[in-house]
Image (tube, rainbow, N blue to C red):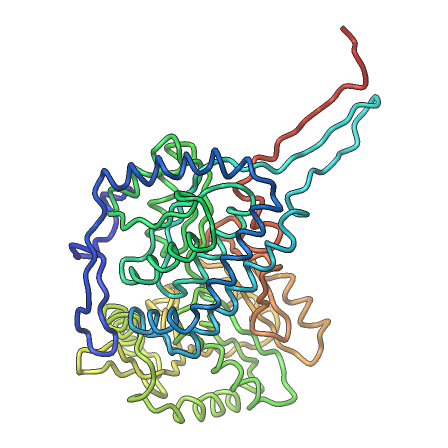
Length: 464
């Protein structure tokens, strides 16, 4: 796939469309080719200067950027609400979490980028250095408009790379504000640059000799297009794509409590998270009690006050996936209604009896739909969990931690949590396997994906 084949947005510009009403709020024109060239020139010039600063200097600049970001938390949260429907409290929480990423790399970046000496034969010295490689492109999504950008940009800025960010076309104000924050904190012009690029311009940026790598968080289609282009031009890429994470309940001392946790986790960000627990796999002996408790949670939701999805298109696609499942025999026990007023509201749903012939079985359900599967035993749970084409995250719950750990060892996933919905923290690596992509962000790995791991070898003494 190329970007010529990439699914069209059918838009003539970056647009803010209020998900509460479906009304167009503001449009931003696509960048001109001259503006893209200026961004590339600026990123390269900034890189040549930025890489010459010490890691400690770069880390302190990044720390200031985190403080500026935190100071504008309420403003950014309101912007995210207007652009993609995120409730204000969740938006503020996103910004606060982003600030911990800035601090983590400011605190630990110099040590993570430190030289590593290796044992060498014959009295020689071998040192592996972590050095920047140049300007990078980040192609970012709308569901976490700040967090997704921050986890890509921050470790690379500390390392000494510069970044060009192509954000989702529905969150242009957030994209602009993030660039302003970086400049206000003292990053050199060009070190962090937002561009309102078209799909064709993305292809040109990836192909440009000055750009050394690309990171994408988004759909499989977008990931396939970016990976093909990166491969053609011999550029390193990192892909964080979809997920259909299993939430496996082997047993529980409090079924209602674990069901409430499953529901709360599924509703986080209105179900619009790659690592959301999209498949609830519950042992046969507690399945019915679990479903009853889950339904109590679902029926307590006031659909009229539940936040909208990010767009009407997203809500309509989710409704089509659920309708397809119901038409083929799945049971819809709660919710599942699409608003008729043109808004992006979709009533949170509970779906049972999903089978392999339904779209909901293999496709990612990116919204507030909890799908429950009945499993017979541990082997069956592993079989169902691994049947997905995705392999991002997974979680296992049991009063027997050893049992949960043994099952977790058998799961095809990049991240597995035991007795927790997920493991979150700037110090922990994030990424998946299979069609969920490849590469890692955050933690020490976040500074390694786009690093030149340069070997410097010094012989023991003159021999010529």
